[in-house]
Image (cartoon, rainbow, N blue to C red; front, side, top):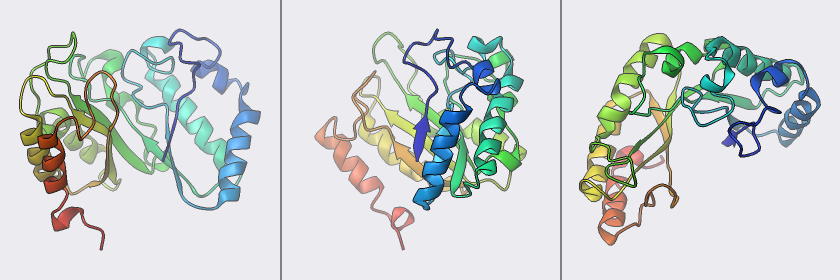
Length: 233
């Protein structure tokens, strides 16, 4: 899976805003990607413009006049361009952020308003974290169900035939027991049958997201994924 981010690491950059993509300015670049992926021939999941319901990327609603329709048009525009290039092995992943300090059903933060539609999306994905008391966040300790449960139900209703994934998730060390959170999370995931894949955000960034932030956390992770549910047949 490729996470494709149209920016130069500056959230205020204008060059890659959605209107510039819709204008055709980047068509040549997009065609190069489509042709290269088609030539490779194997399935490639493309998570384009993720976390569009947040406030920290130049493609999000807030940085595009709080207009979710513009995001939808851009997503569809790119998918259609790949289809025109006969790039059938590209699979499209739509991925909002389950951020808990922003309202999920109000204005530009309502992720459902950004859904491009079943004919343009192959996978529905979610990003979300249990920050706890890391840094300046001082969030309440959140379970997997608290982070993702509501979104899972809403999107299952909107797009019941689509497979889902957790494209980014992890737990910090402050505010609760990370080993226990890991064990409970891997049990919880089994109650969501549409979740067909997940990716742990195994990076030192805002918090110690890595699974081996402590010996106890690593042991919990190893135990959690040792059940037959997570084993490849």
